Length: 246
Image (cartoon, rainbow, N blue to C red):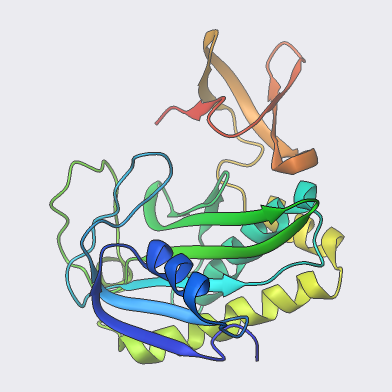
């Protein structure tokens, strides 16, 4: 087992991603080490977004990966396998979930997990990657202004043991990461695309030119999102260049 080979627990942290990075600067840690906590004082999402999580209710983890076998231009595959591993875990308990590009995990139209992937590059190689995950497990009420959070507890009415949940999630992530080590890029992409939120459904999007009707078709090079428009045009977007309209 790689992911979950070593567990480092802290009662609370400003951010698991930041702490994992700081630890790597001081000591050698085996690949797959998981830094986790009951509560984040300054949990981070993409850009300046914050992650809300009630103390001791959810999984807040960061995984240390050493994917030197991946070229920097292929690093979106890390995001894909982490997203798929979370979906594999969730589908132990619920019928389905989806990946809102690039890596938010949704159940119907509600967000149950967020992922923050941060990599350090040295020359033309990835020195290390920190894969941060916030997964809503037992939280019953959300207080922030986030529009659509949901937890596994809210979906099923059940409470879950967090250590057991972490063990299962680690195993599911480990299986997906070993797909990547094995070079199964085609299978990973196929599985990822099949789970994309609103795949092949007509919906409103927005880009720098305004709103438009489109449908998610697939992903292209570097993990770019490919959207087909009603007029037959195909548009390709990097992160933050387009957004889904509820």
